[in-house]
Amino acid sequence: MKTTYDSKTFKSHNKSGKPDNIVEKENDIYLECEKIQKELPSFLRPYFAFLRSNVLPMTRLAYLHDVKFFFSYLINETDLTRAKEPCDVTSEELDSIEASDINLFIDYCRKYIVDDGETVTVYENNNRSLARKKSSISVLFRQLYREKLVSRNITDGFDPIKVPKPGEREIKALQDDEVMIMLDAVTNGTGLTDHERRYWEKTRLRDKAILMLFVTYGLRLSELQQLNVSSFNFSRGEFKIYRKRGKESIMPLNRSVIMVLDDYLTTERKTVTAQNNAAEDALFLSLQGKRITERAIRELVKKYTSIALGTSRDAGYSPHKLRATAATSLIGRGNSIYDVAALLDHEQVTTTQLYARHRMNVKRDLVSDMEWEIERTEE
Image (cartoon, rainbow, N blue to C red; front, side, top):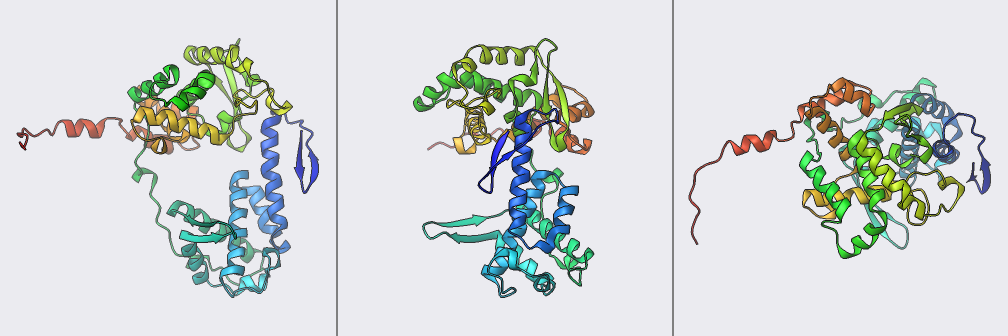
């Protein structure tokens, strides 16, 4: 496997037993983290080591982006540093920062403007995103304090950020009848525009297989996007996926999934020529012969779920809500929450219990029992 790193060719010799595309994605995240670390002060090495050992690779990358953004904020929006670049910020300057300065940074992140000389963009973060940024900076200052690079632990003075508790959030998922409307749309082109139908005629079997895998197994977007043809062993009736933290999981195939995959693999998949070696084994290809992107999957899921919901394309559901659909449907059919938790790879069964509390039609049933006999007002 080859990729570019600092304008050089980076080679990876894969002896892990994982498919090359899985290892390549892990390497891309690793190299991006290394690149950001080079743009930050070298005295943060203990912090970098802590992230490598204690958080998932994608979380590590997000934290590093947050820290770099924080240092850029110090340079461009405050007089707390004399640095011109993030790598020039000193530990002495960080030691002079107060908790109130961090609170002002978090408040700045709620909504800010970036002017690149051609376009002015307004960025806005919700409380969940702000809480992640606060966590990134909190971990940074705790590690600096532990390494005696700053003299005080200021994290206790950071303002709390109110985020909805899991039980407070409305779970959004398709109902079983809406799943059938969605599958009818991808099977027969129902509800598509003339423009959408032109693409549907070329990708309907691929799109149907994608939707079936989502609603049957509750796969994460990254898990589905990384599937290969070699991931499937049809003679044994199973396929392999790679979860968070590099965990392998064997999933059983049922008849309906085998049928849609067979339809796709024996027809549409054969008509598209892989454009590179990396795409030859990819299960789902774009019309250009490349592994389908996560963005393309999001868009097709939004399109078909919007038809099921009878709403605009922009209001369609994300792949994660199809994961919720699988969970609520399985629980609604009487399956054990422990079995559903195992299928969906929930680390804690309390996550699955949230779906168990979400009875699909409870609000509708309650309201239908509260009909009032009134006469229609005449014009």
